Structure formats: C-alpha cells, structure tokens
Length: 376
Image 1 (cartoon, rainbow, N blue to C red):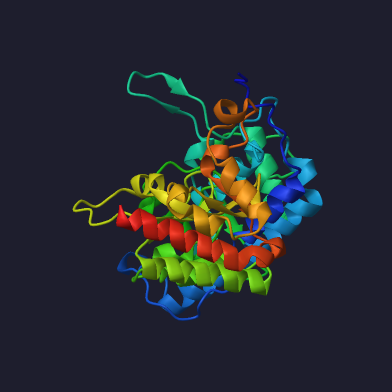
Image 2 (tube, helix red, strand yellow):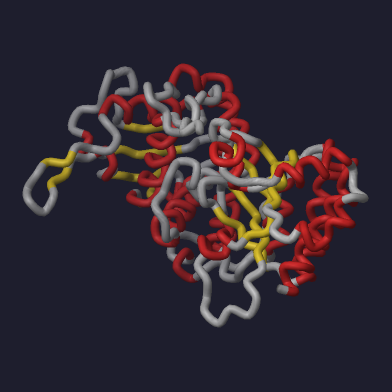
C-alpha cells in the first residue's frame, strides 16, 4: 500500500495573490457599532472609514504581488504547503506589529514606532539569546515591498542591504495616498493580536483578509458572512449555495465558519448537546461543507454516512453523481492505494458553473442524507 503523500508543488505567487484577494470582503457596511475597546483609537466613523481604506490597500497589496511578487517571494527548499512563501508571513506579521506597537501622530497622518518585536533579538528565562523571527535583511525586503504598495518609512535607508540596530528602531510610517488607512491598520492589528485565540499563520490572518467583523459589537449573521465568501463566484452558483445553506439550517444543521487550514463553512448535526462544543469538535461532525483552498479552489465537500437508507433515491440521480457517491470518501492510500489527495475531507464537487446541472440532485441527496442522520 502506498504511504506517500507525494511532493508538494508550490503555486506561483500570482495564484497565491488571487487566493488572498478572493477572501477580502467585497462589501463592508458603512455603519455598524464597534466593541468599546476600539473607541480609544479614533471616532467610530473614522475607524470604519479606515477599515475600508485598509481593505482597498489589500487589493493593491495583491496586485503588487501579482506584478512584482517574483522579486520578493521565494519558496523554501522544502515547502510545507502549496502557498509556503516565508515572505508573506514576514510581510503580514510586520504589518500587524507596526499597527499594534505604534502610536498615531500628526492628527493621524502617520504612525510612530520604536520597536518591532519580531525583528528584535531577545533572551529567554535562562538568559539564552533568541534570534529575531524576521532577520534584518528580510525586514528590509518587506519594507521595500510595502513602499511599492504606497507606504513611506521615514528614517530608514531602503537602499541598504539590511537595517542596522533594528532593536533601536525609530521611524514614522505614513500612507499619503489615504492617511486614514493608518487608523484601519491600527484597529485591525489590535483585533488580530488581542481577539484571536489560536496561533497565527499567514493564511490564517484576520488582518490579511480584512476581517472587520472582529471589531463589531454584535455577531454577524452567518448568511451575510457566506455571501462575502461566495462573492467571486458566478451569480447562479451563489444563489444555489445560499439556497443550500438556508434549507440545511432549517432542517436543523449548525453552520460554522472555520479557518482550520482552509476557508470553510461546515454544516454539522450536533443534536441536543448539553455542553458547548469547540469549533474543532463541531467541524469533526460535519455532514458537508463549502470550502476554499489554494489546492482545490471553491468546492462542495460531502461526507455521507447513510446512503444505504435511501439507495432508491440515489438510483434516480445522474450517473456521474451516482459514481461519486459509490466511490465514497476517505484516506486515498487506504481505500485506493493512491497518493494522498485529501480524500478524507469528503466527496469533492467543484463549486462553479458545472454544479448547476446537478444542483437539484445535490439538494435531494443532502435532504435525504440529513433527514436520515437526524432520525438516528
């Protein structure tokens, strides 16, 4: 039996840029209440405007990755994922720390910063020296890229190979194209550091996808969050996905928006569970999910358990879908002696125009699957 996952083929930086860009919300409301912790930064109106300005910067960030990313983003010798570009982690981590550790000056037209922890050496409890997470040369590389995106760093020689004494950094950061962006950057950075509960990765970075909902005083409606997720897709595909979402919620499934390695809306039946389940526990119970990943793009994944209970229904749906269901899902190596293709995630159906021809059949399939799970 094969035990190999196969070599990781890293995606071109242009495709990674598109992947990032698709996760940026297309529509951010102009009016919503903020958590009290953010009011000390600026007025609510300026914070909301700053977040929209920051969202627009992220579009430019992705465009610069597309046009010039090859000059900055180099894959490691042994990549761990299809989007493993250390530059991206360094650049996004730098943005977070600039926003979090700086002070607004000059009526909010610039940020003053003295230290960037990831670029500063430190010592542990035993006095052992810990090297910076971002080296001086990598820091300069990130600063040069951010200047392409419109930032200005006063007091730093960007022509130098590396920054001398980064632990004694004293600089002003400006964004002349739209200075109110700095308020958005600071607000989003505070949300990213103080409100997240899991370790941050570059592709699980609330700042990079401009997750303004972290700042909202009230929770967002899950349907609205899903609409943002679906916005790059064809209109008819969006309508089908929203219909599937609504019908399954009405049947009794719970929907969670998770970032456990990918962008996902997972639908699970948790019954009358008396204890509050963690996100990972709910995800493990998922019946199906909408997923967006650098590997597969937008997909519908289904994990059927009760097909034997409605075999007569399956016989009436198109043969192509019958074959997918019959093939099942699970570990590719154990089931089919094939290299790992993440088959354990479920039966994969691309979420594009091709799904429209079988949309009614998928609705019938999931309705029967969910009905039989709830009856157990």
